[in-house]
Image (tube, rainbow, N blue to C red; front, side, top):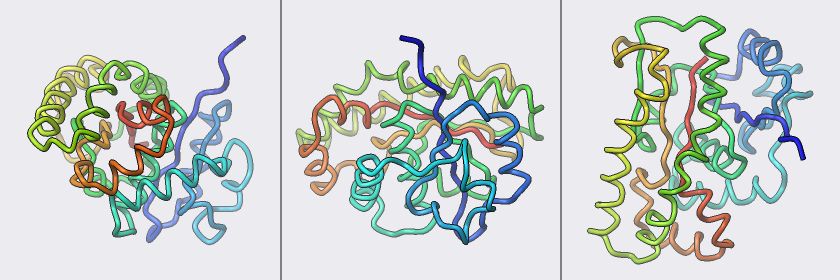
Length: 234
């Protein structure tokens, strides 16, 4: 069976609705992808009319429910940080990349970041498209790290959880530059380019509320959530 379309998850700050140029860029250059809009952003007042049609679509009901419930356990305060958690969960569940359409959201991504790259200026459209494809393969590449992360969370053993989180940060610092090195040899500048998003990095990852949510899931689905996703700023 041939693979399905690539998955992208749209991310922007609800206080700064998505702009028509950003939406047009996605339509033109990601038209063959499924562009999922998180539940908190699938609202006509936040989206240009073009974003209410293909390739944009709402998350399916099961994924939307899990994104809403899990994000509440990790980030009880809504707004930008809560939207980042929602988008990350959807990208992990669907095996996709996050399209960050608002560079002003970089600070909101920091609580989930295990590695990031900044650049002096915006990359070319060709490089952005290429690296969105690379970002879409990050979850699969990190799937081997999911088991230890999940078991550490469910163990409620704080030192074990801290060791697992540190090991993932160290791996991310090696993996990110290797995978995204064509954007730049090193991270430098003020414009955010790529962020690795990891639920294990969240301050809420060690809470009983998050562990209880994970216990309710099929293990295969829980393992998907404990991989890593990547966000690319367009």
